[in-house]
Length: 399
Image (cartoon, rainbow, N blue to C red; front, side, top):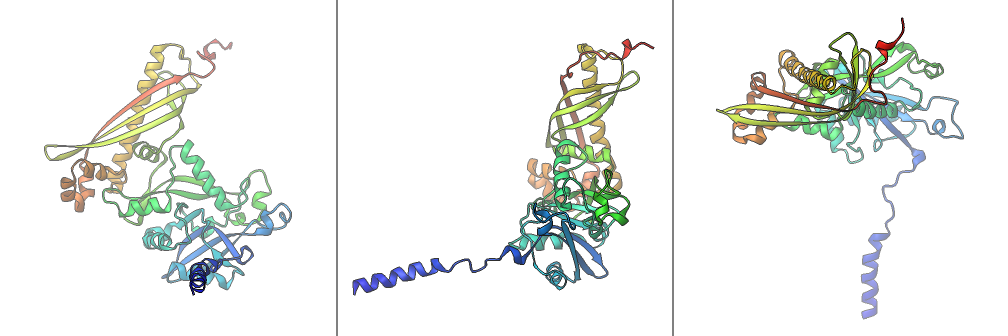
């Protein structure tokens, strides 16, 4: 009897562990989507899925066609449209490897992006580490239709370009799906998303001719930052305004910029390390924001006859660079106050950390308080390296 009971208990324990992969999906039955585009189609939402063509990305079978294909469908909701893609796609669309989510500018302006972001965050198969972008002056469908050289999968190209650009070029930044959701839900800050545009001849963007020449007729270019109020696009920052925003938000890792000499010409500076600290304090019931930027740079090029080996000259360059950084940040904040009237810098969050009760009183009208906010700027620049040369030879050149 005991032996029979043990056998029954063993079977009861082991059988649930032997059910196998009940939800398995064969690779040859899936369409791997790397890029997802969202556009407006009348009263409906239009999705564009950039799907990998397996035979074209393998060493054995590639070269005959394009490495990706694009399927499109429109419906009243996001997942209805994605399911509807099976009307034209021979495979079920697999969403676990999405690299970029692109919103068309018209959709971002008129419909807002919250519903799409929430739907993707709710979907267990979609990982929230994809980069979110806005297609500037075009649709997401058109942007995902551009074939790219070097990285033959366009979604990978966009992801890699933005990833590298955000680390080496200060006007761009990255925002993932979960970060964007946090921006939209957190008080005291409004979302900012990098834009992408198509340069050149759009008519050849989706053909193999676009990658058969040294210079592609149509090219993808990350450009500036888009400003949102809650979940709707309201405008764009210029390149300098985008730089100022990223310095304030501590998004700058390294950068290259020029600084006018006190004489004729320019000096190129390479930022090696940059860090920004933001802090709020309350004085007589009014919040004051302090921004402190610390930058370590090296000299990349000298186009004027200054003596780089002189400590006096280096101190002058450091002082001029500090003034330039403060000017960038001030102009960015003043422009956003004047044109958009929203706090994209997160100053409200700093006020909340300093005095939660005060911020709760201001929260409903924070954007109005933002326009009157007192902001103190401070920059400290140190030039640690001058390259492999000391003084420039420019003054010694013979006429």
